[in-house]
Length: 326
Ligand SMILES: Nc1ncnc2c1ncn2[C@@H]1O[C@H](COP(=O)(O)OP(=O)(O)OP(=O)(O)O)[C@@H](O)[C@H]1O
Image (cartoon, rainbow, N blue to C red; front, top):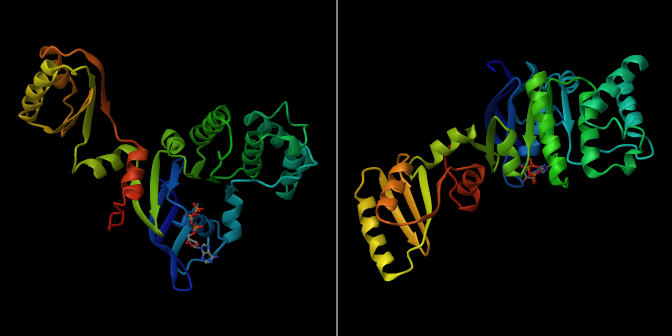
């Protein structure tokens, strides 16, 4: 995955004095699934519009498949499929007829169009529903039809804007599996803009976090969590114990002092039946041994790993917005 397929350099978009996208530098590899994350108004859609050549940057460069989106927007659109959060179809036409219409618009011959459309209907699992009117499709089916519609022109890049909004959990799972398969089997580069952190975490190779037009961080989840949490306590061990008796409380105080005396243990918090231990290295086995030797029965013991929601919270909800750019 060394080849870059999307490259943004100093990309900036202003609306009057308002800076919607502020000097964005970003490179996305071929075949990568990249997540665009950020609160409403962070500049994700404006960035997508500039990639697609649908709005001109105020300054900076954007190229997709080695082609400038600003200078050759039509060439870029030929190679990029864009799936908005709600695709418009002709509701009176069947799913298959809708796709055939798109295929013909993309100048495929009837024979080619029929072959491609039938392949795609099978690929997205809509073979059986292909004759049904699109207006009768469920939300999940419409999104799968939308994905097939985007794939008709055989794009190198697909951009998906909140593609799983309003789909039930099984539909979401199927949709995400489909995206991963497209990326892995056909080397299609996928850009996924979403607020669903767990979904993004499940499928994206890397993510970029947008805040107020700036890209504040980018990387894979473990890189981001290492960077963001290394100054604190990268490992948090949570243990469920029963120490409600006075004897148990005393034993807990002794264990707490013991733990705090160990190198690598940064904090020990005791809260009702829960012990939370922050450490700079993985001390799970050592902590378990000490507690068992002190006579405690363990109800559970988890070593917490920071996920995308922790990263997101750190950037936005906790109000700790870093001043530096990625
Ligand atoms: N045509 C426009 N004229 C003026 N301001 C605009 C225009 N389009 C977008 N903006 C502003 O630019 C900022 C970025 O908007 P953008 O739609 O790119 O954000 P977003 O991250 O995609 O948000 P969302 O998650 O809500 O889609 C917002 O403050 C928005 O109000």
